[in-house]
Amino acid sequence: MKIIEKMAQKASGNMDRPGVTIAFLGDSVTQGCFEICEIRPGAIEAIYDKNAAYHNYLARIFTVLFPTVPVNIINAGISGDNAVHGLSRLERDVISHSPDLTVVCFGLNDCGRGEQGITEYKDALAEMFKRLTAAGSEVIFMTPNMMCTGVSHLLTNDLFRGVAAGIAGLQNAGMLDKYVAAAVDAANIAGVRVCDCYSKWKRLNECGVDTTELLANKINHPDRNMNWLFAIALTETMFE
Image: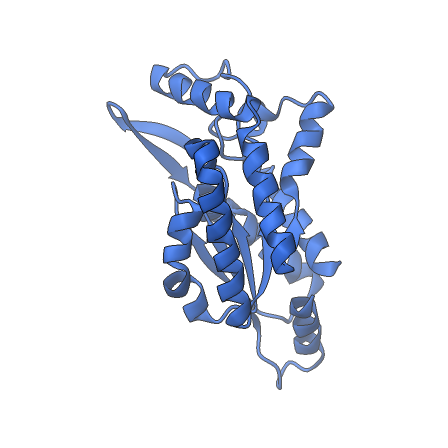
């Protein structure tokens, strides 16, 4: 990808080349959310740890690979967000920063709309890809992690257990699979590169890994260690 070429050029000519900027547009996972707590009856809030967000891990990887190259990270993740709203803030939160590369990741919140939301989700992503490309940014669509497949024994709060049961129903019914497939199709049509992390999570699950226990909140946020999967997969995709 051109982003790697730009890093290599900066590394070989530090005085004459700019650094690179990578924007990350997504939901709570992108923002850096992990565990959850009930801040008042019926109200859920996430625990934020932006240092452990996958894009900061990616930046750490490039500190090793290209130590002289500044990699500027734009964190445009918003907890609870979806592709339609992400499109509405694309100019403000991403394009205005003129990123060299934009990584887009939506699907976890979108799939809660069921079958009727797939077309709007896919259309929003397609328009994102179009606008980002027109603005001169390379684009990667990164598929999300799996959500929980059951209610973890570690969840003792009745509210959290109810949420987990509903999310597991969506995951086990294949709803997120359908959204991911629609997103990948939109990316392929637009000529956008796909970093397919979802298939990696699915493979782990097929091989007997309890993927629910790899979630920090036991619902839909990967734990800090699993965020390395995103970072490493993105690095591999960028070097393809």
